[in-house]
Image (cartoon, rainbow, N blue to C red; front, side, top):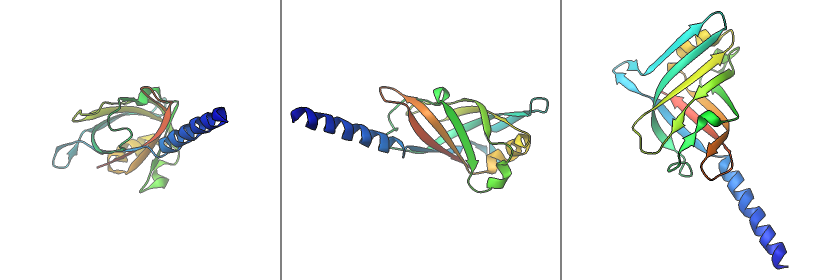
Length: 156
């Protein structure tokens, strides 16, 4: 009977940790350099149809579960994104082929690099800094925890 109760407690704690991880979120604003100027740039490669973006970010809101943790988004198994305000703009450019982003608590700002691949990605890159974007990183490594999924909102 003790064994059964112990196993049940372990399963409940794992279920609780997993359900909590499904709701993890972070919100960032694009860093303002001067009035009307933002820390954002991109390069378009018409041969490979890839847009490489560099985005300077400032943390706006961080889930309390993630607040004190160093997070390597680079090691995520997969990354997805969507435009919350204009979903039709990103049609034909839903693939992220590369991303580089590290979160460390207490830093004033962060840099995110990503490569979008697809025929419509030049247009998306041109307006990325005015879109409200939700990125979903699947299988993010957090120190001493199982990989989790994290939603990251980016806006001006």
